[in-house]
View 1 (cartoon, helix red, strand yellow):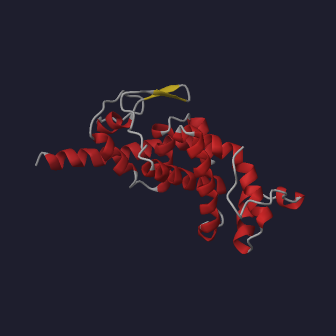
View 2 (spheres, helix red, strand yellow):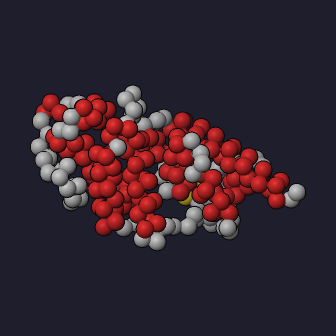
View 3 (tube, helix red, strand yellow):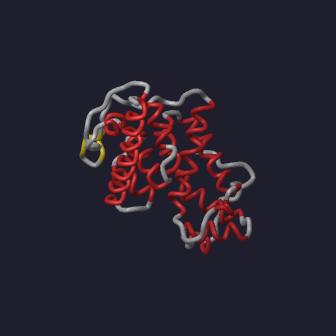
Length: 216
């Protein structure tokens, strides 16, 4: 069982009224007043799901538990930054993913991009990202090679708008199926694919600009 963040998570007995609120209503309520039952309800809803995501992401159950706790501590700390009208789930998963990346860096476990391996995504074989970017007719179903370009890819992905960045991180870096990524981001599968297409287009343009600059 995942331990909950100290202080904020001691009370797990959410009232029936709190339990009937949507995620967005809960975080809005928590912005107005730091009600422990509201916070506990959010944690309870995502405890198993988010922990399992982090365990898959990190490949380490203990580290996943730590990151789960720091994620919700960040939710508490950054609650006022949540924009009303947005969906809570993608905001939460963005925080969790960023916390996981930070944890990997701290533990020197940051994984290299798997550039020689394809993974299943919604029944399709999705190649690694570098060669997808390097091809003139970028398609997410090409095979890929390894090399120093992996670092370039990571850096360029970090410059993408958050919606595109999240799609690339979940599908290409984490190996998720389209439908699973769609669930996390609370968007249709078609939107996941369109965001990937837009991301690949931007990365491809940046890659070609780099090649032109290198040959001048």
